[in-house]
Image (cartoon, rainbow, N blue to C red; front, top):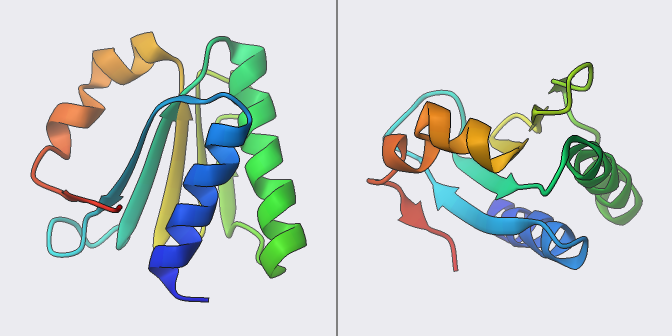
Length: 112
């Protein structure tokens, strides 16, 4: 599967579970961490955990791919699923605002 399609699939999965303010970003040339980021806000810690778990389950079901690493499940305020060249961030709005995530990646191209 093309990685851009993979990113779109993740964004759709998040949207299906009522994630808010979903951004799919092409960060190639801006960081060596990954090629794409998918950033989404959750309404609560419980919602954040459910979103991350659902992405992990659905991606495994649909593509067979598992994240290389998952961070944040102990607090559920900012969860990160690392798929190598695609990193998924699920966070509470106040955490997203505090760290200025959207401002940090304002130069990234949006994935349509």
